[in-house]
Length: 242
Image 1 (spheres, rainbow, N blue to C red):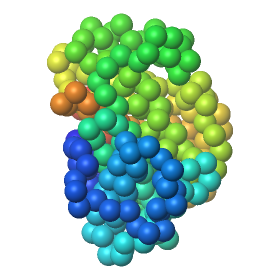
Image 2 (cartoon, helix red, strand yellow; image 1 turned 135 degrees about the vertical axis):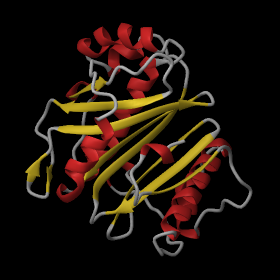
Image 3 (cartoon, rainbow, N blue to C red; image 1 turned 90 degrees about the vertical axis):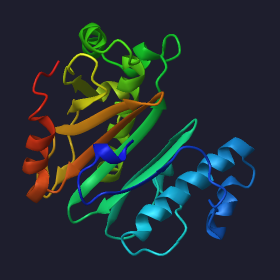
Image 4 (cartoon, one colour; image 1 turned 45 degrees about the vertical axis):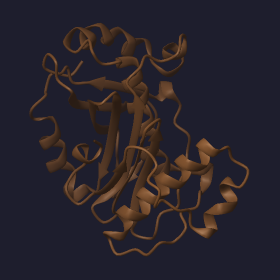
C-alpha cells in the first residue's frame, strides 16, 4: 500500500499482520522487555519489515535502536521511516544520497475521536474539508489529515532535530477526482524549514492512498538534484489544490 506512494529507489517492506518469522534482534529485546504482548508484536514486526527493506541495500541484520525522541537510528547513508497500526506494519528506506528524509504513516480509515480534529488541525484545514468530503465521501478525511501530519513530522525531525507541532504545518490536499482512492498533498511549513543541500525547504510534498480499511501517507524530501523532477511528477496530474 505504501509502496505505491514512494519514488523509485525506495525500498519498502509491508505486512498485514504479524508473520511468525518476525524476530527481534537481541539488542532490541530490552526495549520491549516489559511491554504488553500487542506492543511487543507490533514492535517486532515493524523492525522485521525494516530489516527486510535494508537487506535489499545490502545491510545485515543490525539492531534498530531508538535515538532522540524515539526516532529510529538508521545505518550510515540510509534514511527511513516505520509505521504500524492495527493489522498493518511497514518500513521504507532510501539512500541518503538521493533522499534527504522520508516519513510514512498508516491509520485505520475511521473518524478521529471526538474533539481530536480541533487539536491536530488549523481552522483553514478544517474549512477545506467539506470540498474533500464532497469529492470522496467514503474516506475519513479527518484521520487522513492526521496521518499526513504524522508523515510530515517523521520527515521533519531527522532534518531538524526539533519538534513540529500540529499547528506549525498547513496541509493542503489536491482535490481528488470523484471516488479517487489516492492523491497528493503539500505541507506548507509555518515555521522556518530545514536546510537541504544548503537550501531552505518551505514545503513538503506528499502522497496518500486509501485501501482495505486503511489510510496511508508518505512524504519524501528529495536531495536538490532530484527534487524538481519528483515534485513535477507528483503534482502534474492533480493540480487543483485546496
